[in-house]
Image (cartoon, rainbow, N blue to C red; front, side, top):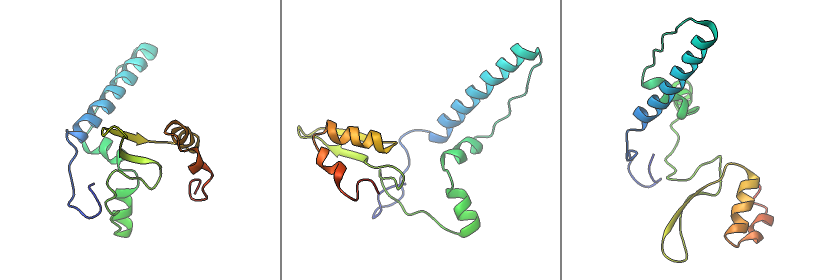
Length: 124
């Protein structure tokens, strides 16, 4: 994490703790639903490392198998665009992260830049 030309950064909160808490809550709900259906209880056993590894996607595998360390990209993503924080015309900030081409097109229309949709690089 961090900007490409800067040092690594930490999230401003306990990211692994929060993700583990969500995964545990989900596992408990699934266990309760199973108990409701079958009458049998379940054991929920979760290490903090397991859920955070799912959030990291393929990066641990890339490093383990290939020795590849993904370079820091700041707020940007190689999978989604636009994705960053942007200064608004009135000097405030907005965070944008689109998840699909159609969402990105709607964002461009919303910010008054529908012309960008027709650029060759936009759909790449």
